Length: 126
Image (cartoon, rainbow, N blue to C red; front, side, top):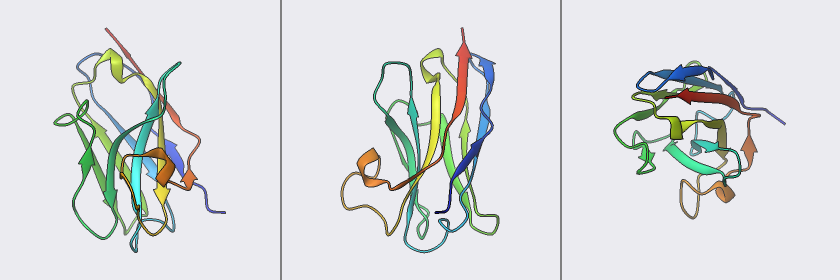
């Protein structure tokens, strides 16, 4: 089973930026969906950004719209999440996920995704 692997998590101050990377070999081509989710302590897993690998049409949660950008580099089998103007409430473990064949429901719904990475921690201090 091919794994997804996230890197790039760190501790930053509010207002700063981070770029998360996800090695997603086998998932960045074809009609799949790739997404970034996050889960803070005591919270449910939240979809923050997603994109279909065969279309350049990203989707974002309202909480990150205008600050986060998802991008796929199919040649490198990588998925990125550029996070700007970070806030303390962005602190969470961030997960990369893949939905093989796309989704039938909400593209930011965790139940649509079959493959998950182990997560990378982002901490934003005020």
